[in-house]
Length: 289
Image (cartoon, rainbow, N blue to C red; front, side, top):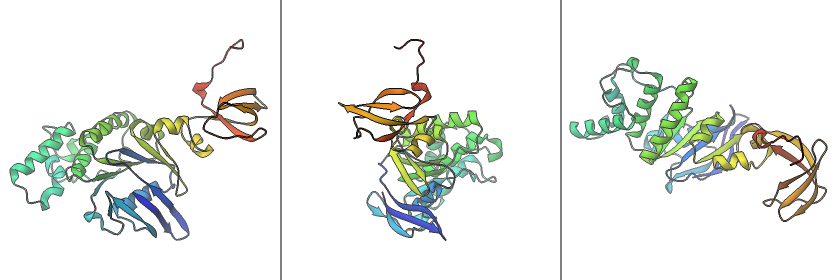
């Protein structure tokens, strides 16, 4: 849980009084354009930045001022940082070196995560013998083998080509379901966040504009900025002519009289409103249907 977190850099407010609750075991995305504050918020969760005010809790434990290696989190970056002088197995098991494990237990854990990321038999390969997608999976396994409560991912698919990125989206979501760990995923890519996430927080100028499921974000944006950022939409001005049983009759300069569902909102006759229509919701008819 994030409680009233604020972070400034000089006169720039990077994260502005954010309150956020992420459910245990969910795939949660922070979505926004460059400079919106999403990566700063992730770095605050990781402990790489300290907040000016506010608190951060994981499963009830206040971790606001814990150093990164004392937090129950791990992080995967866009730059995989795979050690080139080590083979795949040594990379994955690197974090376990300080654990007092027998060789049998160590190799068992490494083999388990190699199987989980579908790289069984690749343990002896070096990094330069792997594709970009395989390196990304090794980085994921190295983070997951430490069994963090929360895995933080900073645009981890950004360095991959389009086709490989699409494949990795499916694999990443499947992996998250298999391990059951909370994923907090930062991206500027709408398609990535909407296709993988249980919930998405849309950010702009250091603030969270809306937190919803992908379907709700697309179908029920709470404001113009969210509607415009998610997908393609056409806006036009209209005036409320009447409301009856959750149906609003609107008068538009360009479309004439139209009706729309407004049962979740309260509008007054004569009120000026902004109407948004997704292109795929439009049907053209020669005659009035």
